[in-house]
Length: 392
Ligand SMILES: Cc1ncc(COP(=O)(O)O)c(C=O)c1O
Image 1: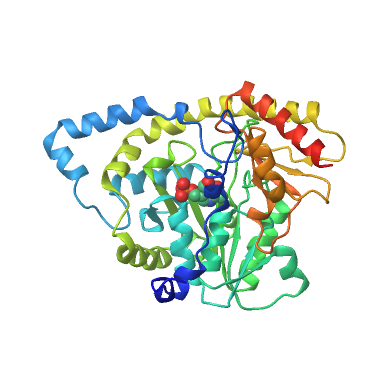
Image 2 (image 1 turned 90 degrees about the vertical axis):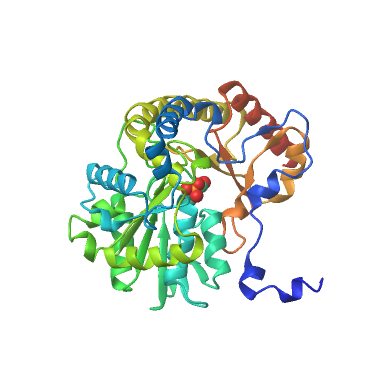
């Protein structure tokens, strides 16, 4: 240990590197097909719409000055209003006091953890789950348990429940109405919050609009009494480099989260918020339908390639949206070990254990169809199947 390492805070020492980042640094064949990272396709970013808004903004000096100035900590007012209007179209009756704009959904998860989680309290998650959330919960010293583990030995001190109901990362699946109701009931029974992370809600591929757990809860009570706190982002519908996400919660929670955000980074970047506010109607009405068409073709290609290349000993999910398919291989195959061979054979994925709070899912893996064109998806799955056959 170097002298500096011994001076790092306990919090900093609990922060671990992301398995997905590590993927980018491992040795690999020169023409490797990356089915690991869950990035949107950069060639589909709404560059034209953003250019139009930004050039109009920067051309007029009074408008440019506003867009380059600090703004309200809770978010650029026009964007907060637009998000509020959008949430209303999704069955969430709320006002701007219920909205906080964040630097992506990731910051929202971090702020919510800061607000609700004390060391050694329990956070209940789906298993598998999004590693970015697991990392935040663990860094804050929470004891992370799965919903099933919690059901086997229920305890009262749940600090937070974390779940994605639509097009889950990493499985691509969605919760049934019954499962959604159960999570809302658990939040009420435990007097705690249900953090609903919904970044893929726009990427519905089979024509059925996605509904949030928050909208379901609002059938019964007002936003101010809701236990579901909603988190989403423009990272998947527009571009992750904008770093614009949002939280919908009771006003008293938004107020306190805003204070936390203020002490962390004051506000999300004004210019990015101005760009999103100006392009939002185009993004939701015209851009998202195009994304759906492209991602649907990729999902279908990946599902066909899986059928073509894998036998009955491998199972996979059938996502109705989002970016991911989750594969379960025979139990003796360790996908973390297999990954370095796969990379040398020209294909990457994310090993299942990266999505686990307790090291399980060692025989599973996540494939992403979002950032690779259809011919490469077919070839990537073919390479993966050959590597898996070699390991059996
Ligand atoms: C489930 C989930 N939550 C949050 C995030 C973070 O999103 P953002 O780019 O808005 O920080 C991601 C990104 O992949 C995600 O998959």
